[in-house]
Image 1: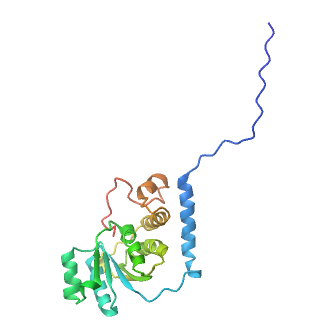
Image 2: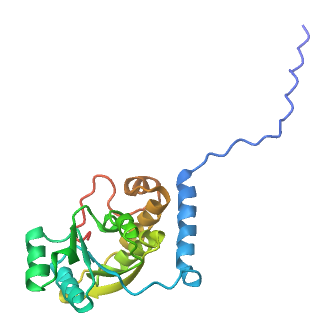
Image 3: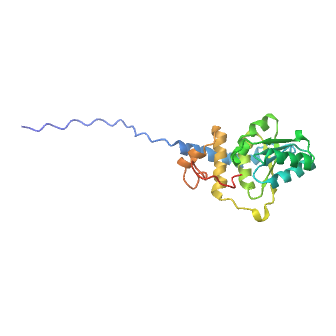
Length: 222
């Protein structure tokens, strides 16, 4: 029996197989682009007015003491994010430093450095704050200022650092933590959510924020 000829091959459609999309890469590219835009803000950012507010990041009562003295000197209102207990704060600002109750606002919504800003920026924008003095420990200032300028900057709020000397208690922060929190801030601006857990799972280990899901909180988080 004669062998049957092989079936004719189908003509190639010319289509290439679709590449699998990686949303993590897209978010990373957009975040880096946003960071470059932020770094170039000196060319287009309007000159801010004089300071209108003192923003204190909790974590060390020395920061609150420094802010209280600064508020007395400058006559500015104070917002303390995630600070000491209300009893001590009221005693420090009102009784010891002599500030009026209406000059000090205590806010306890923050859980970490990112939420120090995300919990407040929209309130500050509604209050028409465009320039705030940022008070935190000197060893925390770099990370706080990076996150704050991304998050608060997205709402048109300029921050001027007012570091508090931590002397022999300073603990240098890891570069991964500084830039990881900066990336979290950029992702929050883009999505309106804290994507720390997502970033820990989808981004390279050297870029993902330290402390993914289930990790032990950093005692120096603030």
